Image (tube, rainbow, N blue to C red; front, side):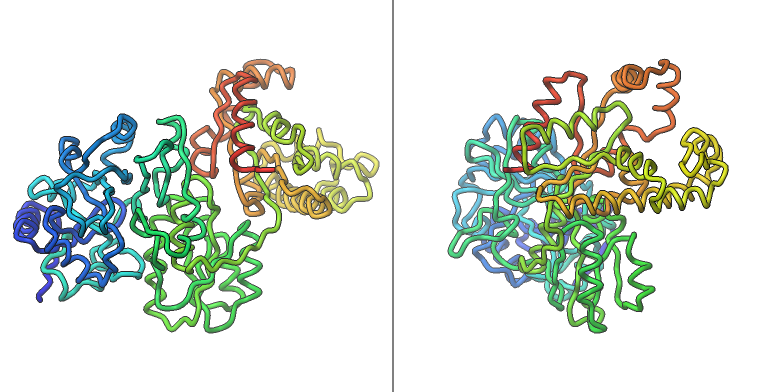
Length: 539
């Protein structure tokens, strides 16, 4: 069979629709990954998908629609909660499991009474569906291999197996859609993706995630969603996944590396691996960049198939919030064979000035004998208070003007570095490393499992790389200003200047695994801390 590769456009849409309506299979772009599409109403056409992919037929497929009125065609019943989720996230990377209609054959659902349905946001996918019919479309790769995020990936796997591939550019999201089961009482995530459990709960009030996303299905358990049963997303070389704080996974990979290995890492460590002489090093991006990880993960995994790597040692992103989708795919690629690198749970708490970081930490630690809260500012002051300490000596060597009879005059030091970025950077290089080492030393000697690191400059200092989770406190600027004025006894003008020189709420929402909105109400913050503790810090 000849495989034609066509750029997305009017001619490509017409040709794709014609082939699909005649029972053929076509590779199409979506915002998540490329799909291998066929008429969802035609069991013979659906069978050609399984044939092209080499996919086991007990693995259900997702049906793609272009309009809300098609939902009633492919689902027998649509709960009100499903309509609310669709209004919130469609078109987009969300699949809902609903009771299937008689229109959908067993070939699509693997004999289940339910079907996964989604409305993609990629314009080419929606146009092709609108011109043809509801489409069953798993990822357009050979079964088990990393999913394709470009048309060239599809061509590599499907050349000679399908008549047409539509090139719609690189996929914006990069991992498959979130799959949520809407047939029970509480919405249950069966496959993590760009739409997180927290986002679903924000719309519906509650949501949970199936344990199989973290450890795989139990023996004999039947999958309700694609990607649950078999080893997926796997390159030719076996993957070993190192989980924990980025600094700890870096140390473990460095320890276990052999010259035959390839490495998946983060930007912060790439130069260090290269300086050690390690080869075949590919980065997912900065360790905090979950959106970047999802866009790159499949391409990075595919890169290793062009090498002779014997193993792939992979640093695992943090698994919370938007990181869950990438972590799930990496765990599947490793067959859930993972190495735990961080014994305790280190939670970095940061956020806007006046957002309530210290109060949030205090609420999390309240009444708990397994929680240790450490304040970076307090540790810094304690280090400076020791005239014989290494940090004091280092600062006074670099800034002798701040010497006050062997102690550091903090007021003088502040004036020295305030308007001199180079000197401020030199001071930060000394203080951040010393404070982090002291906090880690205190945590290591403690018998507490949960270590809260209250660090205003969590990312700027690099402390985030010692954390297994990062949480950002955000609040309105007016509320923050009032709290700063009351806390520090300064004017509103001074408080506004301070806020103006710091990152906005968007910075923390972008970088932190999770964010907590402080409304200004103590009761609300207490409730948020209790919910956070119950979910992420079980006793």
